Length: 235
Length: 124
Image (cartoon, rainbow over all chains, first blue to last red; front, side, top):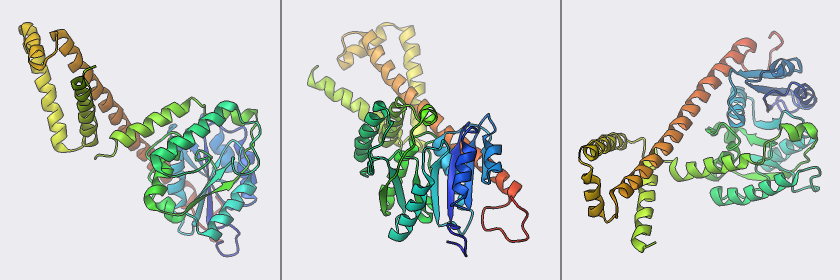
């Protein structure tokens, strides 16, 4: 808390690509709990940027679409300009997350001194409405990431995450696409910072499933991660 | 497959991995250029004297000169593909950094830096 403003030391980062239909209500709901919200408009061709601004968010606009990882890095770098920022929250723009979960995660990260807290849809009540293909991909991904990073999380690709300032300051995500989630695990494994998982609920509906990541994209992610691990480190 | 073939394949893969892990070293970049020139020289010589590839094949224990050519081309193709992949990834990272810097700079210029607003500040 900064001064008397609850969660005044928290910045919520909402990455957005053509989500004008829903992102306004997502930002408005966030603003009820968090005074600082930054929307990263990742080169949308619709009114996403204007909608986020009208809903009360600060908006950073990519001139072209770069991808989820690049947009997250932009949000992190923007939020860290605020010297009062102590915690950063990553929150998806499609309305699949609950603001109450984000609040609880910030409280827990603060009370337990965690540097990375990742939401997990598998720790609480069993998720409903999740397609079988996504369940399979997430479970295979869990094993793959445990092998490649050594970090064991039940739902590393959950979009709801909390970073401490010191963890965020060391981030330099080079994967523009969804492979950034594995990069986050590598970063926490390298740093030795404290991390944890928090049970969250995902609101699956026709819109979030339509806009969500395609299961087949896991092949691209796995390829990029393996090539980078095998060949990409030498400079 | 004979054991020697397995060893040779493993050696080729190991060289590929090693070369790409050290691809940014000046010596490595120079080595790749020299290898390309040498390969072009061998190509010219093979056109001028078609029996040369067969002689080389005999020298390294490959049955036919065309098979040797195929093996060499597969390795060159793998190098080229991997090189292009990394080149694009590096350009992508640089491009993202440039777009990001521009986006943040514009946002700060438009609404001021993020942080607590003073009473005198204009609304965002």
